[in-house]
Image (tube, rainbow over the protein chains, first blue to last red):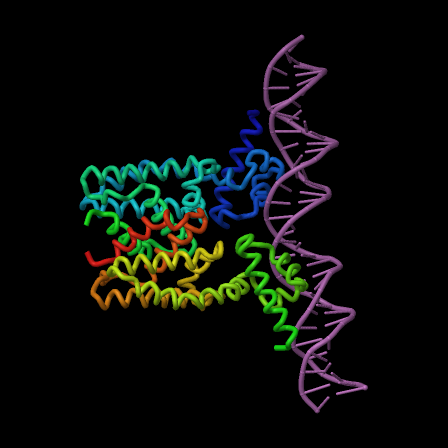
Length: 183
Length: 183
DNA sequence: ACATTACCGGAGACTGTCTCCGCTTGCCAG
DNA sequence: CTGGCAAGCGGAGACAGTCTCCGGTAATGT
C-alpha cells in the first residue's frame, strides 16, 4: 500500500472511532470522510461497507478482551463471582460503542460476516471462562457456548439500546449466572 | 373523523402490516403509501412517525397477548414448564414482526414512548405469570418484572436479528427460567 | 344548494449512500 | 534526478428514503 493511502486509512479509522462514539454506529459516513479530510470515494474504497469500518474501529478494544478475561478469572469469591465479573466485563466491552453489542451478537452464528474475527474473539473469551468453571465442575453440563454468548449479548444489547447502567444490568446477569451454575 | 379519513387510515395500517412483514419494520414508508393508494402526506398526517405506524400495526397481535398468557399458565408440568411455555410464547409474539422485539424491549423503561401501550401490555402479561409463580412460592424473591422482561426481550431480539428458530432459543430460555426459579 | 373546513396527494427540499471518472501524486527504473 | 505510470484521490452527481407544504377536492351541516 502506498504511504499516502496508509495515512488516509489510519486517519479515517481514527476519525470514525470518534464519530461513532459521538453519534452511534449509524453515523453518516460522509461526515466521517469530511472530518477525515478525504473524499467519500476514498472512504468507500478503503471500507466498502459500513461494517468493514466498524470492524476496523473495533479492532483496538477487542484486543483488550483477553486481559479482561484474565482479570475476571482472577476474581476471588468462587464460580458465581467469577462468572458475574466476566459477564459484567463482557457487557461493558460490548456497550463501549453504541450499536456494537447488537452487531457482534447477531453475527455470532454467521460464518462470512465482515466482523467475524471480532465475534470469534468474544466467543473464545467466553469459552475460556466456561471451561475454567467446568474444570471446577461448577457449570451445568448441557450449556453451549454460543447460547451463553447470545444470552449475555442480548443483555448487552438491551443495556446499550436502553442506556442501562451497570446497576440495572446486574440483576439480569445474576439470573443468567444462576441459571448456568450447577444447582 | 371523516369517513374517508377513517377508510384511508385502516387501509394504510393493513398495507403497512403486509409490507413490514415482507421487508421488516424499516421498509420505506413511501412504498406503503403508494401501495395503499394514498399520498405520502396522508400517511404522515395519520402517523407522524414510523413508530406511530408500528404501534398501529402491532395493535392487533398485541391484543392476543392476554390469551397467550392464559394458555401458558394452563400448561401442565409445574412452574418450570409454565415459565418456559410463557417465555416461548413471549418470544414468538415479539419476533412475529422483524424489528419489534428490539423496539418494544428498548422502550420498556421509557415513559413517553409512542409504543408505550404495547410495552405495558407485555410487562403486565409477564407480571401476571411471575405473580402466579410467586403464589406457589416457586420464584426467587428478588427478581423484578422489568429485568425479566428485558432478559426475555433480549433473547427475543437476538432470535429476531439472527433469525433463530424455537429450537435454538430454547436453551437460552431454560437458563433464564432456571435462574429465576427458587433454588 | 352552499359554505365551510377536514382532508387529500404529490411535488420537491433535504439527508445520507455509494459510484464513477478525470486529475494528482508517490514510487521506481533508467 | 527525472519522467512515466499506476495507485490513489476526491467530489460531482445519481439514487433512495424522509418528511413538509400547500393548492385543490369533496364530505358534512344547515
